Length: 375
Ligand code: T4K
Image (spheres, protein in one colour):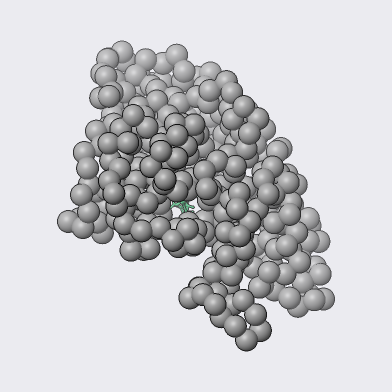
């Protein structure tokens, strides 16, 4: 490839569209602290996600930290290690103990059959991840959570706009966290949000994210600062106008990958089920019995200026910062997937020709071999 191809590239509005959106900030000189852009984006997102309460944040990670605090979780929280460091960090930074549950071999979300065996009298919540936008088994999670009176917070960082049987993911569990980072399907440069059914929780979050201030002379909570500013919100307003188009472009590239790779022996894709409307956020490929290892393909692509990523390797239960701190639990499926997965470049402006070239490189290393993912 004569131009570098990264795993993703930020979606951006036209330059003039953004300038038009931020123009009035020079008149109002109101730049942050829940200004008009912030308020407008909250309303527009609630409409887009078909949900009632949206609390915006400076980024997805802080959103997750703050909702954990707002739900007043204690003790142990069950989660998966096949995720970005943020999910586990948010739990630990709240003084809680992460308990690691294995993942499904097909969609890489939390293995609900195994989940129940990890519940103790110290468990207060489950934080499953809709990893790559693949939706967790929400019905079973809800059943388990009800039975043991646990809170459920979905890490929906990857799942913006995804629906199951027409229902938006924002409405599952007690709360969901979305990331609006530059690398996401919908971005506000940096940013994030919590959606939750209970409006008192989103009100609490809005207070927490502004130092716990409840009135001109009252600070009721020990809050922090995690506010989205007006420039971020303006970017969100513009990007939201264009997001459906961007998802369509992603879909085109995604389908081209599927055409090339789905029948190739030794390559495993996790395609969205029929009842799910995907956002085509990522293109994870598991090399499961392929003639070359994931690492070899990663290097081969790199030689050709293509920068795929090993999302999510290493697992969070093996991160250096957690060595000796928590019981890592044996999570064999997660280990296998983390060792063998590669997320290939996928973004709206990627050319179909680039997809063809990437797949052609992979095809040149193709031979038939069979291995089995541990279950
Ligand atoms: N939970 C989960 C499951 C998550 O995946 C994440 C974040 C979070 C929670 C936390 O949400 P945030 O606090 O981030 O809102 C990236 C993102 O920084 C991170 O948001 C994301 N997950 C993670 C999966 O990917 P890196 O370290 O891989 O990013 P970086 O800088 O290497 O960028 C990757 C590629 O994206 C670049 O090669 C080119 C492209 N890029 C990057 C940036 C920064 C752009 O096109 N524009 C840009 O501005 O973590």
